[in-house]
Length: 566
Ligand SMILES: [Zn+2]
Image 1 (spheres, helix red, strand yellow):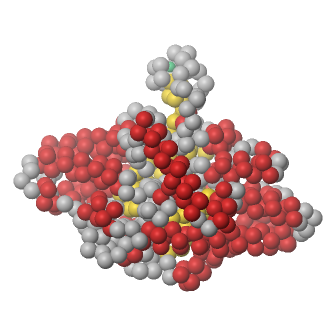
Image 2 (cartoon, rainbow, N blue to C red):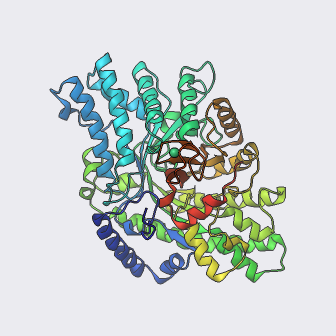
Image 3 (cartoon, helix red, strand yellow):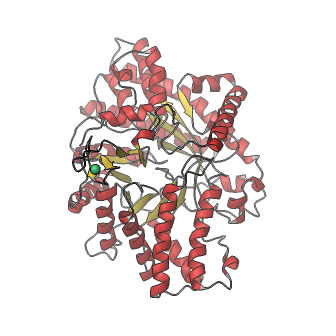
């Protein structure tokens, strides 16, 4: 591929429309920054914070789990043959994704893809005969392939789609759940989208006697081959009191559960806006100001600095939210037409009636580097350092909770994935502080343990678990495996058990996946051991999604080169 083309995110493919869009986007981002109060823009420009999706500032919200059933257009299926009903249903899904993809800035979630698709097919009167079941299966395969192949959004990017499955409760929904996993497993390794999330729940699929245990095992065997599905652990400390049907992942990790204005759950709700704070930067400032002070004093100053930045972040989150409320519902034609938000979008008097259900999130990156700068040690190497790390994340959550009370909106704490900021923050900081922290070219994802820590997976899971309980706006833990764990479903299942016990809410497995473009051989290699070809497609997970390594931005390439197995 042409190495002169610079990709801004791993899902991007360049086209003429995309180039024109890019030019517009850059201009819009500059205009937005130029129109913000000087201090806000400065914090973003100088790398203290990152205002995500700046081009969408005040124009739209971030992500959504569709309320799929409420506004479903049954009338457009009237008089169709059963086969055409099936085909049209999946065409409808595609059109939702492609249209809503242009009405909002972030990911889209199907909260219970298996359950809801079964409900719709039943309501449409589609019989469960051999012909229709075959067509349903083929349509699922086509839909998965389409999610992978369509780089259509803004003329260049694939859609961020997440299908949550696993709670199937009828023959048909079980059939759909099975088909999603089997068809995804069967599609070539270069098909690595959409994001599929399997919900693990006791009495449903987790235990050996549970009715969907076969589907859980099937999901694990698919993960062993393709790193997908990932696992939403509904019995973890933070999630166990909720109905698992109300839990889902949207986009790469967003979690939306509690609601000040209604029932808990993610259906018809999403994140409105989020801003990430650069923790290593604040820690390096403390180090400069208090080089000889005790850890306690240094941590105190760190908290003060974070709070000062968070105060401004709060203002920006609120400003963006209020500006989005001024938009007309007509500017969201698909969301409007199919009533995809929780309230009746079509008849809503104001945007606030829906968007008040969304979350405003404080994100963070580089907890590991920050604690190392403040204490001199990695947080996972000593119990005092670990307590400092946990205590600081609780501090941020408490701050978010206070904002809920103060502004009566759904604020939350998000453990940011940060595809772009991992490198952007570090690059800026390197110009100010040249040290071993900035030297490596990237910061560690959210509260994660360093990717080259080499600590055993069970220990990594146990240490990261408690952070999941605190980060109510979304987070994920990864287990880095040296190679594809094919045939070791039991091993993966043990990691899942350990994760649930440790408090982990969302778990993923990563391993290097190289595919020879000459002969299709899979494994981990620089040149193909079968045919000798050096034309290798490397698939890696970045920011929650699988992508082809060649398209990664530089910070993430640095990170990948540091990854070591747990
Ligand atoms: Zn080969």
